[in-house]
Length: 374
Ligand code: VAH
Image (spheres, rainbow, N blue to C red):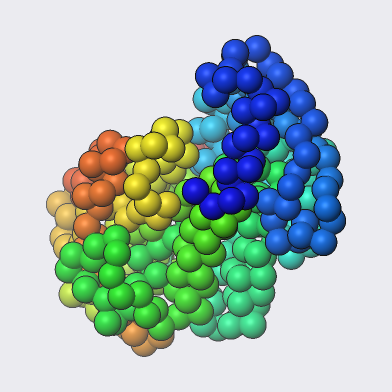
């Protein structure tokens, strides 16, 4: 065990008595001995830490207005209480989001702002979703590098300094054309060809470094393409698999921007969010790694269209390939090996392709009925 972590363990045990300390809320001033690179210059700084086992986590979600943040907040608020989950972003939230629970401005590029939020709200868990996705990142490499890499550094330092449990999503995009593609295991060559993928490999490696060097409780899942009914993805390569449902309901026609035979791993959002909570709640001694693949299904646009046409025979699907997205998709895994997640912390998916189709159509059809009625 690295020296710093051993020291931290001794400090905590001395202050708290035996490791199995009582469940009574116990707040002590813990001498913070340089758990983060930014603390190395100061010989000590004090912060109070709550060791109570009975408290719920106090959660901050960054990039909360993306495809996953609102659904994640809804699920976590059900479990931990509405006021224990703070959604944040740099954009103004829709009123439905604003009125569903605590929402604040947070800019992950503003280290001071982020640090104040963590201290003022006594945050203990952080879900870091701010990032530019694959296709939009290729259109703005400098911004993607800043948000996905510099922003991550701020998050890592603050999480280490304040002893947060930190979740950072990675992606199938963290692999490249020289990775095994069918299936892709947890540990193999990772030479992605997008700034998004490079930044996510960096996130995985930096998170694991901070775990081993500073004792940061970093946890990471490589997501497949995520399909959601009530939120739109923002500039990814797998976005076609969400758009097809909306266009099918709206017009009965869909133009796909990937080739019909492009096979990619995909997952329904409810499975993704449940996996994220399960890995964050997993007892630390069940985790042999800090970054895991998770998988549910793998399909091509043609297979998705055919399954959808079983419910909507009149659906017309045409193809107009976006060569940037196609080149990205051709470099990504076709299928994920997630056997470690299933073995170590009991991951299993609930939604296969037929269930996905039914769930998406039920939701969107009811949404359309409501919209027409108003
Ligand atoms: C993208 N939806 O397409 C994201 C995701 C697995 C892909 O990271 O960029």
